[in-house]
Length: 311
Image (tube, rainbow, N blue to C red; front, side):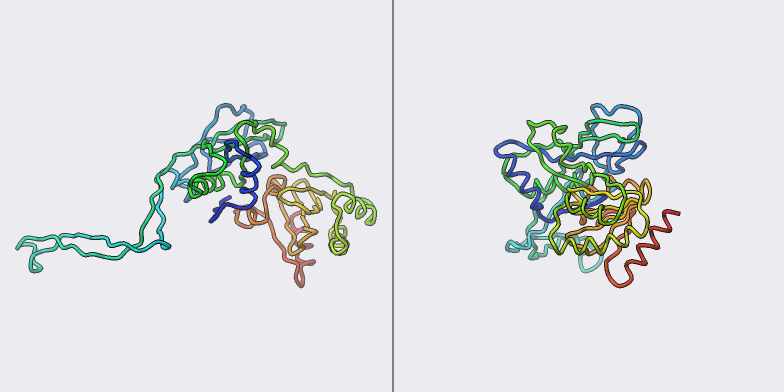
């Protein structure tokens, strides 16, 4: 998953303000299936071996920000006055190198530039807990920031290095262990057994407290989801806030957003991890999923996808 921010997102700014006067770090909590890995972090593989004292330098061959983390980078300051810069090169006398050469200097107006050195920041990985199938890990950048970063560009640089490597990012005070934040980034989806339509709807209403317009939307969308005979219904929050999921197999889930209702997301594998992503993160990733926009013919398209992957 690759994601780049042009400016600090509002949710990150809010997290920074919540840190008060404390120092903070960029971090994330990720739940990975046994055998999985984060490809941008060389050497990190989830297996039966405990993860201890592991740090990884984001692979510079896999992303722009990882490369800049090593080599540095510069930006063109088009909002500042241009400056005169002299460029020199050697030229042959009278066009003939046999007659010798001389230096030629040309003055040009150019934009000013700022150069940012590579920080060589690494990402520390901490194992939080594990089951037979999954390992939950905490990741944090080895760069500590003050409450108000003196240079927001430096913070944005670090945020992009982390975001590109991990795919999710937040900030937390350095004096609070990462284990305390496990609930903030991992969704504990609630499973609702399939039963009579009205009973399921009442249960969803009680959990999500939808508005009248949202209730109408749920009613319409649930008819299709139930017609396809789901195994369970799922409700959750966080990245996929206000979503209702219909589970058709262990890894086959269709998510409906009861607030916006512009598209249905169908996931085929590792849906618990993908569902922690925001819509923008998901759309900018290389993950395997289908997004079906609610326009003419969307019902038959969803039915076709579900039937294909369930078979």
